[in-house]
Image 1: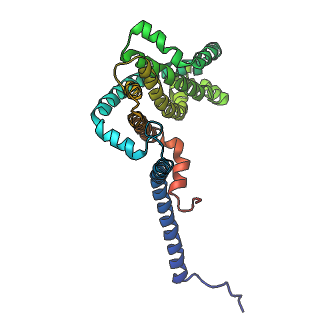
Image 2 (image 1 turned 120 degrees about the vertical axis):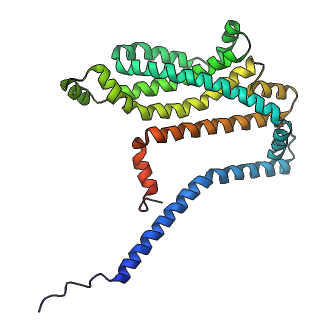
Amino acid sequence: MPRDAGPAPTPRRGEANARRVEAMIAAARRRRRLQRLLPWIILAGIFLVWEMAVHAMDIAPFVLPAPSAIADSMVKWWWPLLNNAWQTLLTTMVGFALAIVFGLALGVAIGSSALLYHGLYPLLIGFNSVPKVAVVPILVIWFGIGAVPAIITAFLISFFPIVVNVATGIATVEPELRDVLRALGARPSDIIRKVGLPRAMPYFFASLKIAITVAFVGSIMSETVAANAGIGHLMMVASSRFDVPLVFAGLIVTGVMGVLMYALAVAVENRTTGWAMRGQAEQQVSPMGGA
């Protein structure tokens, strides 16, 4: 008699597998939903603990204001906050745009030439080590009080990450790949344009996410020293009046602008270099991904 080949697949077993897959997909959706909500939950918890601690320890508002006092100050001074935030955003974006243009060009040049890499890289490191707050008084002497020192400070403080990351992305193209392309008749400019620049794009956008946040630091740092408008100027005026809730309101507005600009950089990165993050995207979408 022929041996029994085992039980044949039944429709009930197929339905169980389908339900298991649906459960995995639903769990993956819940994880993604939790990932989106988690920052807001943590932020709400921080503000709640902050509010309770201020009231429990009876801390004076001019020492550490409660979040409710900061919110009241934001409502009261919403128009000056809006005007000065716009000024800070404008100067930061101008300095950041200049950093992108010059940083990308210099990064490509340094990454493409070993001579420039070894000649300019130590100078860039030395210049980046100089505290930018020490440069602001010199900029005031040269350009006077106003938006120009803030623009230049934002440019100087966000320039270095872009140069370093772009140069690294181009310089790390495999020598074997360069040799193969040269053997196929590719010119050095073709290698940079068709291989080096696409290879450097993930590095470039990673540097943008760093540079946009530190650009705000540069603008506000300059505004606190030599400006007649901007969030930094507003915070200095508020601190001279011991209006600490308004100072914290300026900090929160600056943080919100930084997060929005970071989110914009991430959105552009996902649209232009999504291929570089496909592994992470597949892990998030796949129902078989780890918890």
